[in-house]
Length: 172
Image (cartoon, rainbow, N blue to C red; front, side, top):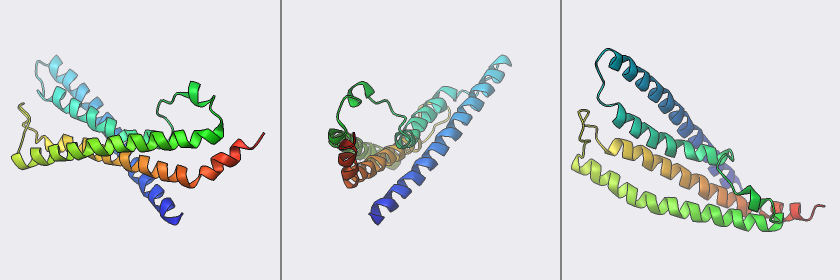
């Protein structure tokens, strides 16, 4: 139980860090868009807005997702879940957490290989910025690892607390 609490705290800390980075990326995107508007009104451009905003959106999405999961902000099918008795709810929650974690872990294995390949081959974007592609790919990979960790910790927590689900179902 102590290890679970430690893993949960570590996961929560990393999720908050990911959310903080996502917030910084939102602020960056706002600033870059405003700068581009100003520069275009003067007949100039940064020429990298589309590329960098795209990278920021991808990184922001994957880095912010674990925090949203932790806070219960992801879309759930309440119409169905509200009709299921509480004693049968924990196996569904466990199943969905494990399946989703498995999917993210599986995808991240392939994504990790892609990031490694981009880094080792020195792949850069085909724009004026010539951005090393492993940087935005790495940010997405980090987000995949964070959501995977969050889902595994969530599954372990459900397993450890399943007696809570069962005792709740016996209450009137």
